[in-house]
Structures are given as C-alpha cells and as structure tokens.
Amino acid sequence: QSMTLFQSSADLLKSYSSQHCSARVVKRLSSVEALAEEEQAYGDVSCAIQLLIHLGTKDFLDISTATNDGVDSQQVTDIIFFGLQQIIPLMTQGLLQFPNLCSQYFNLVGFMMDTYPDKVCVLQYDLFDALLESLLFGMSYVDSFVAKSSLQGISGLVREHLKHKSLSQHLATHPDIFDKCSSRLLQEVVFQSIVWDRLEPSGMALLPLVAADLQRFASVVTGLTQRIPLEHQERLSGAFQKLVQPTVLSKVSTGGYEGRMNRMKFKKDFEVFVREVHAFLVVK
Image 1 (cartoon, helix red, strand yellow):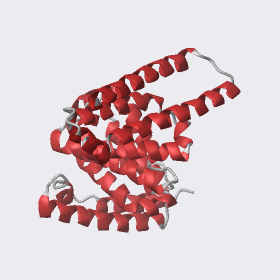
Image 2: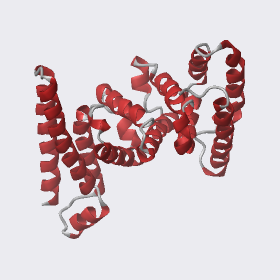
Image 3: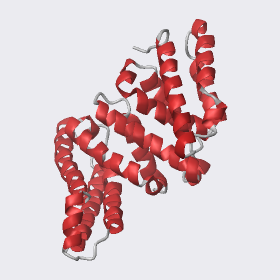
Image 4: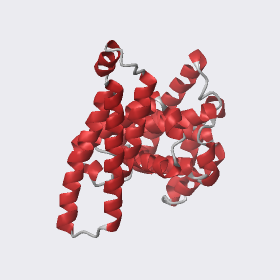
C-alpha cells in the first residue's frame, strides 16, 4: 500500500507539472489573470512540496517498513527525487517571492543536495540549469535560512564534481557554469552587506568553485576588477591573491583531518578577505 501511495503521488505530480507547463506556454494572460494563476500555482506547488517532504520523513518511512510493504529507502528517494524534477519547472522567481513557499522549496532542495548530489548532477541540462538558477536566486534571499540552504546546495554540487567529475557532461556543452556561479556569488553576496549572516556558507561555496578551475576563476576576478574604480583595482587583486592559496585549493576534496584543517584555514582567510574588501568595495 505504501508503494502504491508513493507511485500515485509521483503520477499526480507528473500530470500536474505537464499540464501546468503546457498551459503556461500557450496562454497569454492579462496581468489580473496572471496574478490569479500565480496564486493558484502557489497553493498547488506548496501542497506538492509538503507531500514530498512528508513522504521523506523518518516517521513515515518507519511506518512503511513496519507494515512490511516492501518499500526501501532507495525507492522512496527515487520517487521524491522524481517529484522534485516535476516541481523545478514550476518554480518561477515570482513563486519564490512567497516566503513560506520559498522556505519549503529550499528545505526540500537542501535535503536532496546534501544527501544525493550525484543525482542532481546528472539531471537533464534544462532541469539542472533551472535548479541552479533557483539556488543562485536563493543565495541572496533576505531569509538567511533560504540563503544558507542555497549556498550549501551550490557547494555540494561543486564538491561532488571535484570528487567524481559528475558535471563533466554539462560542462562540455556549457563551460561557463562555474563562472556564472562565482561571478554572481561575489557580486550578489560577498560584495554586499548581506554577506554577514551567511558568511561561512558563502566561503564554503566559493572554495570549491575556485578549486574546480583556478584559471577560469582568475578570469572572472579579472573581469570584476576591471569594472571597479581604478584606484581600488590593485587592492582587490591583492586581496584575491592572498585568499587563493594553491596548497589549500589542492586539498579541498581531501577527507579526514587534513581536509578539515585546510577548510578551516580558508574559512579564516575568507573572513579576513571579506572585511578587507568591504572597507572599500561594498555595493549598496
């Protein structure tokens, strides 16, 4: 019975997502109609996310196991992940402006990113890009929980790639994926006053991005440096040079004591970097 419920939930989400996305493409709505549709979508997507979160709770899994329905955790994970794929195309930036829905969405995404980053990395590119865009949106969100979840999600994706080259297929056709992440992270979070309530996850997201491709990151930094007043360019370049230490970057994916020590060193260096940069470069 539990497996039937899981499968029925997946079928329901697939049907709703398919119909909603098709309708959104073909209909041209007035502003009033569009607002009404967005409010309806808010309720529907919120229910869908709550359903997936509920299916993944420990208590629900314990009940399924106790009733001997033959449901294992991997099956449940696959169905929740399938459900997430149905929700991603529906999550417009308009819907992400609703605080409760935004928190629910990133609660679900954060769980999947922390636990199964390998599955996220092999999503079809359109879905992967939509998910990544939502994370980039979330990292500068006013709610610190949403921002931290988004930054941790980005960090998890890039660390997964560092370990297993999981994003190689996407990078072969879209080589600027990490460039986009680095540039927006620096401009929209690190150089902004909002960074202070998300300082550590910002640093832990930047670290693997730098380590993934130091040359491309250097190009991003050069581009950003050239866009600020001339009198600050040398100072910003110097701050980046002190932050980016090759010995630390080479051990980002190392486990155990050595890996922890290098991440702790970068964490301290990143805080110094942010304080130095904010002395002359905070973007209002």
